[in-house]
Image (cartoon, rainbow, N blue to C red; front, side, top):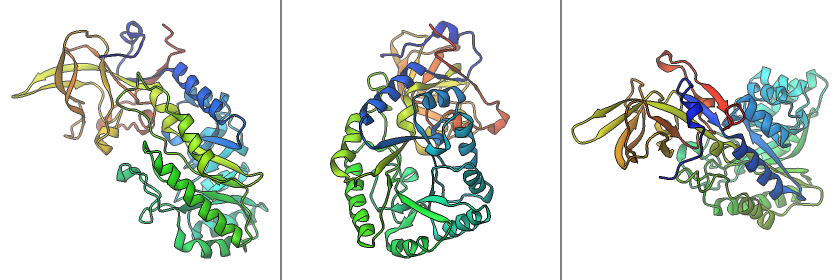
Amino acid sequence: MTKANYPVNKFKALQTPFYYYDLEVLRATLSEINAQTAGKSFQVHYALKANVNPLVLKTIKDAGLGADCVSGGEVQAALDAGIPASKVVFAGVGKADWEIELGLDNDIFCFNVESIPELEVINEMAGAKGKIARVALRINPNVSAHTHHYITTGLNENKFGINLTDLDKVTDLVLTLPHIKMEGIHFHIGSQITDMSSFEDLSVKVNEIQEHFESRGVKLEHINVGGGLGINYEHPNHFPIPDFQSYFNIFSKHLTLRTGQTLHFELGRAVVAQCGSLISKVLYVKEGTSKKFAILDAGFTELIRPALYQAYHRIENLTSELPEEKYDVVGPICESSDTFAKDYSMNATQRGDLIALRSAGAYGEIMASQYNLRKLPKAYTSDDLAI
């Protein structure tokens, strides 16, 4: 089994479980994003919901990315990290008043608005401050992302956004609101999308919607196509950086920008997933009737995706070179769903072995909980633990 190059000897001195971020992988990923968007009217906003570890966020800020936020806490984290308010977009189906105030007070670039009531509230609150709020209408294009139903967001039956059937009604309203400036339109069809045809379908739909606005005399300065680009969870060593070239080329080829328009992206998982791992230790190897259980000191409190989405994460035994055997790899939480993988082949395992759960840079640390009164793990980077 091919394994990542980890500072294993330094890992042995640390209390497990912990998160480990390879900042060289992250920097290479960011460099590729910047290379593929250079010379284009593209602006990439990092989706903070994937990971807000301060050192990770600083590295992303240093690369010049903006921020895509879905809570007031994320807006504040972006600002605290030094990301300019002029690059902050704020989405979310249920923005609280204090969160809207935070965005208004800091003159963020844009609110991605998802309903008529939200428009009315933002207009009222902006008026009370004597301000004009910049907004983009989040529209459901009814394009399938061909992904897990929990992370599909652009269909008519989802809670997010404005359906196409309501578009004229919402447009009529937004043009009458004195403290709202409609900057553009926003879309997000889902996450972990590996079928590029979904982005082609989205581009075609955006073109149609833009023509509809133009027929009504509405000029859009910005188009935001969200994020959703998936990663290779099966082979993180061979594919540490997603295929950004194909991704951005889809939009360059199929989405028609008008003169002066900017195309915005909101990438999260594709930016940070492959740079992160959850490092755990084997507590016990339990012999069952017909299988073996590798019981780790990490559980779904540290990486919930397998329990929540039945998601796959590659698992590597960092301290064994023995022939592979099959295990159910499980955590210590008092729930049957606390299972990372069943009948999983990895190097023969014993108590004390160090285990890496790969591609945990996205939705690992940020979704950690203290269920069972477990302590939140620490995080380290390759800069901290240089080999």
